Length: 505
Image (cartoon, rainbow, N blue to C red; front, side):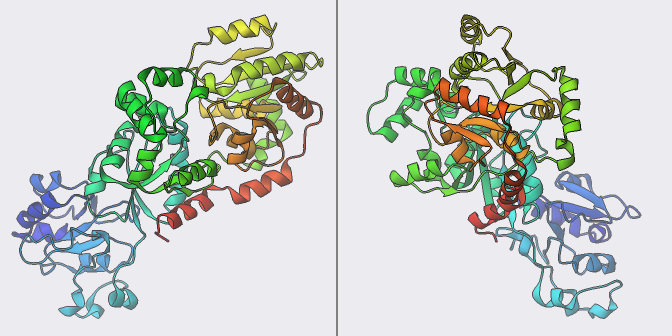
């Protein structure tokens, strides 16, 4: 900050203001002048040399608007894409308590004609002040967290920043998750991203319940989050309030082991705290509405897009070769973390029926295991599927994940955890044009195209086997339906609709 380096009084007043300022602050310095005081530097989040990057969230604070050598500063501040504030006189924080990104610098033309400035300036900007994108604070996990939600948000951010300035608070980012996002006062919206894992979302959930704000919830039920955050007894109390009856700790344990028995969704507290609560499944929105609670529906977007060139027959063959799969064996994949809600038993029984049709096929679960596989291996052995099904049981990188989708002849995505589920893995199959079998709820919540064959939510093995057989013996055309789906479910459309739901555009 040239003005702070050439004005003996300004640094002291700046320290006072910065100590009270709770948002990000970017400083601009001139390397040809003496360095800034260490105490002052400690209060600046970032310091740039004679430059300002508009994509960095921050506030330019100029406490010496009447100081010497202001021409460089003036030219810079006349740009409408720069957040700025001027504090004149004493260490007042007037303007810092509200949306500080919208405070316009005290106009220099009061003292000096704008024509005296070097460089270009915009008369409309001088008349109307700065105009900026809305400011969003986003509390979320990010990669490298092993979370589908983290992967989704990373792609969402790229699209959302077209419509808003986004400051991310994340365990994996430069700014940790904290109450600062809620208390800073500089954001137009604070958005919490919630999922069913306390490891990834626990602290974000607690801040949402305490301070409110908008919430994007990626799960139709939060049993896992509550049991880890509140313990079985606290979770039982929450379930009792939702169901209007006493729920015992033993029931919570039973639900955790077998989610098909679960009666409560554990969304009430989030729905009360959030404004708005945004859900990806319309069924969940409707279920809350029946209980007098409000939520908004935002269709799930494709977050792992595919270039058409990568989906060619040559690329598919290359992927099979990399994975070591022979051409004469039909490959069926089930993607994502492996747990008891993935319909494993029904899938195994379906594979046993499929083999009776003399189809040379293999089923592989691609993902990390979050349960004991021994019972499922025993069932597979009892059905004589030792050489037909396998579990990868490891977290794979992006390249390998895409190879499995490219190499596969069919996908299989099933859920037994009640209605309202969203599957990023099924979305990946849709985006790649991979014909797949899914239960009705999972497919309907994604508005899946017709090359996703639906089976009842009860997961009858015969229906699953028949649908897989139909795909493997007469692979449906996918090009036109895939293109139409992508046009409606891309992340740019999602980001725009999100801003609308947040009343920001």
